[in-house]
Image (spheres, rainbow, N blue to C red):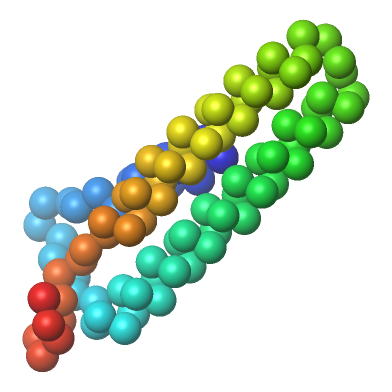
Length: 95
């Protein structure tokens, strides 16, 4: 989950000197794909926390709760970054 969040944060961080445009339709599609991917990653993370709990009851549910909190924090930050991603519009598109 953390890898997804870091990768997304890196992808949406503007780079000096790199000005590529994206049509509005493509931007919306890419944002939807990013959010859908994050949703799936959180589902997978939840499954993983449950599987760990079932396999090793040591300090449970505390460990599972901590793992879920970490995953949710990463999900919220990554989702916010995806929804605020705003690459330059191409000529003819609305900003």
